[in-house]
Image: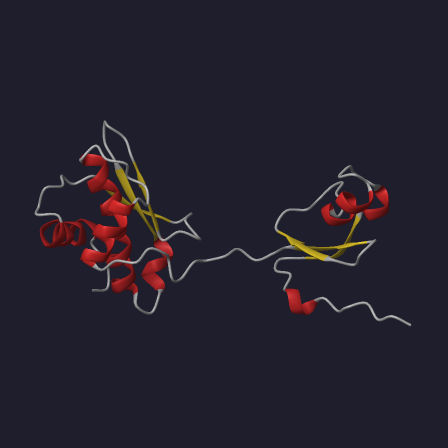
Length: 174
């Protein structure tokens, strides 16, 4: 299957695992999902199931897409039955009976863009957004009753498109 037909996969799951009782919700690809493979958006006027676009590029794309859609359909099925639709015991029971996963095995994490270092303890802090005025929480908690203390102001060590933890050299003492 080169292009994945979400409605077709939904229909297959609906007959295999839900006795055909689910009406077709809006199903769409979402290019902004990164750490989740999919999501269910409950709405009495029309529910939505979204599947992460990046799954189409994975080695086992069809398996991952099918698994994700099955997982989201359990949320939808519970919602339709007016039951709690989170990861409840009933959700887990259905998940096990149809053989879908609880967690996304291939999340896409955004890289860190900045690396800061505490002037007090030397702890490295990796973040995605630039910090303006920030101090080491551990040092401020230990030495300043949890209040900001300029002695522990974070110093920017590196900044760029993708700062990797092993690319920042450690300070040499002596």
